[in-house]
Amino acid sequence: MDTRAPLTHDDYTVGWICALPVETAAANLMLDKLHPPLPSLRADENTYILGSIGEHNVVIASLPGGAYGNTSATSVGMQLLSSFRAIRIGLMVGVGGGVPSSNADIRLGDIVVSQPTATSGGVIQYDLGKVLSGGRFERTGSLNRPPKVLLTALATLKAYHMTRDSRVTEFISDIQAKIPAHKAMTFARPTQEDCLFQVEYNHIVSNTCLNCDRSKLSPRSHRENKDPVIHYGLIGSGNQVVKDGRWRDKLARDLGVYCLDMEAAGLLNDFPCLVVRGICDYADSHKNKEWQGYAAAVAAAYAKELLLVVPTDQIATTPTARDTLADSAHLNAGDSQSPRTTAGANPRCKSQKHRQFFQLARLRCYA
Image (cartoon, rainbow, N blue to C red; front, side):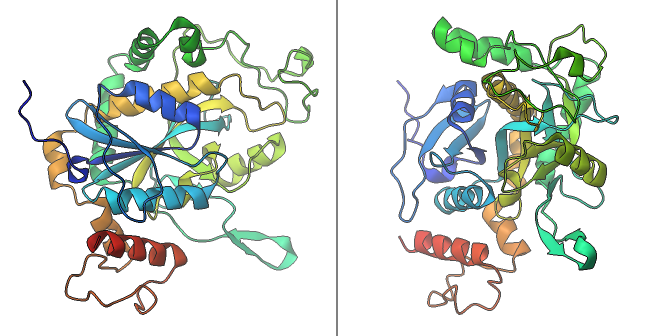
């Protein structure tokens, strides 16, 4: 008989956010154990899946149906942190559009992991900036880096993969064994050919590329191994779906991004996290959903493999995401000495997002 006390909101230290139902399903299947739900707290409109991976208790949250983009991701992340106050590390896991270039041979089913540089936290919001004279666009602002404990685990896993295979395919096989065969096909590698067409060639209207001209394929070397390749680099994030090869290649030239998505930039400054993307298309006119299930699964599998190399003692000494956010925004959301302070009256609440977080946190404190 299990005599351990029931888990509470404060026993969960890992927050995992998904945008699409197929991403949430893949994340759910990666859990080693599924936990019973907890009651919703005041001012939280999210729904959660609770469980554990290794020794880590994990909260999975997803964007509302039909909601996409940075703003929706921000809202979900802030409400999660308001209810689960002990969250210390975050993951944004799902699918993205690949940006192949001479620097990175990115293909469908590969994995792109956000990696900070000297000037970037690993994610660039490519549509945030100002238009200058002559129509020039200057990108402004910067996004926070992931927590140090995640970057340390990232380095550990990269070193591991230099001498041993990733466990991604092992975890994919595990989840396929958990569910009926006809459902497992959702997460299997597609039999459809991986086609990267020349940037000038537009898609022939259809749900697939079967009618597209194969003579317009971009030449690429043959890959013998079908296992996903893991790429570490910058991810470009914006509020619009990119379905144009020319625009994709311009972002590659200008920013050096490996992948494009619609949610990551909405999280980084309000939910400190690492971003993991499975490549499901090439962000061009040939974009379709054939690879979405497999791409969601490989991204979730990598996230699981990463968590398994994060030591629990390092998690315990890592500041909570709420504290990190409060420090970066010069906020003290839990200041019990100033219970009458409101977000509107606090001059340090410099953005609408931080005012919203302050209000949510304050409601949670006095709920």
